[in-house]
Amino acid sequence: MTNCLTEYYRCPSRYEKFAVAGQLSEASGYFCFGDNTVYGRCCELRPADAPTGPLWNAAQGVHSEAGTTYLPFDLAQVVDSLRNELYVEEWASGRLKSAIASAYYLVRPVLPVAVRKHLQRIRLRNWDRLPFPHWPVDRTVDNLMEQVMLLSLRAQNLKQIPFIWFWPEGASSCALMTHDVETALGTDLCPMLMDANDSFGIKASFQVIPEERYHVTKEFLHSIRQRGFEVVVHDLNHDGRLFQDRKQFIERAAKINGYGKEFGATGFRAGILYRNQQWYDALDFEYDMSVPNVAHLDPQRGGCCTVMPYFIGHVLELPVTMTQDYTLFNILNDYSTGLWYRQIELIMEKHGLISVVIHPDYLTGFRERSIYEALLAHLVDLREKKNVWITTPGEVNRWWRQRAEMTIVEEGEHLRIEGAGQERASIAYASEKDGRLVLSLTAAPSTVSSR
Image 1 (cartoon, rainbow, N blue to C red):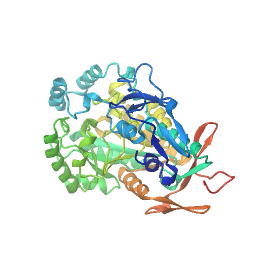
Image 2 (cartoon, helix red, strand yellow; image 1 turned 180 degrees about the vertical axis):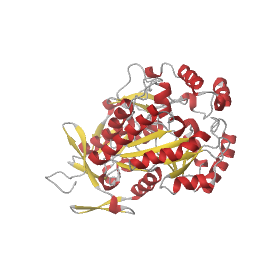
Image 3 (cartoon, rainbow, N blue to C red; image 1 turned 90 degrees about the horizontal axis):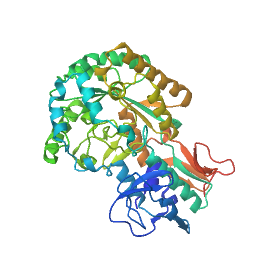
Image 4 (cartoon, rainbow, N blue to C red; image 1 turned 60 degrees about the vertical axis):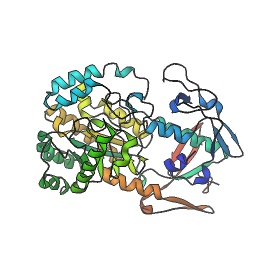
């Protein structure tokens, strides 16, 4: 069992005292832990094959002894299974299995939006009946980490556990604006989008497709960067086939890595949010933005079940936690901000990452632009009133990597943070109140030390 709690909270490792309570099942499956449905291997019985119906509650098998908490599952294995979407059998091989889907992406570039959205609605019918992950935001991993932190407090009889706060300068949450540029029309509309963002004081990243869709010039890339925006590599040619075949993926990844160096980009996003996290070792990028939090309305179902960044090997994953503009307008036929605002509320309850995908290609009408500007205004309001950090993916990547290397040094009753970027970091405290975990940037009044 690896140090999941330490990695998530950046608390001193001495507070992480967990062990597996017995022999794990050979197969992975679904079970509950408290109110949360999880996926992985567990002790005592074979987990269920589906998330429907009555599930065994693993909370019944938890016990503590001499400060150590014994769990009837491997915490790291469960967390990795959720983040890496190992519960999604259809996509486990990393390839599209449907001949119809392959044919669709062959002709997709020439299909009108009206035809595309009609076909996509047929493909996505009954999406709202999917029991797992949880719509509209799945916070299973984050709830699980809160539960085990609470167990650690109780087992060790502690009033609080110090950890390094998630965001710099004590920000309550973080927000990213990202723009996937899919067509030549989208490239023409990028200046308009930058003007809109700048009018609200929000910088963003532009995901640029290197081949076939449009010609990427140095002047185009410079026009983005000179205004303080970021460039991210967006697939190779956005044909929906990047992860169909391992050999082909390796060949394409080499080209994509080359474009990353040519564009001076440290981030990547796959077309149509297709992904296979087990192949990410071939990507020579610092961060990826291809994994949805919950993917009920995406061609590739699944979801990472967390609102926090996390590492997949050497790559930092910045999950997409908000419904995309195309999906909102064309699949849900929703021309309002209600869903977006509800998702933001749920993400902020966990101090998570608000990651938005907006396409310049689809902001061609007054109605769409008005809704986007309303979202920008809402984010600005949250920045002013709730201390939300609005930044770019590259900045989040730099911060999260620094935070991952920071440590809390305990010297008697005094605590301090060591590591690059420590001047921006804050010590926070996890404690229990009314049976729930409470996170605070202020120590409990009765004590300075958590010993």
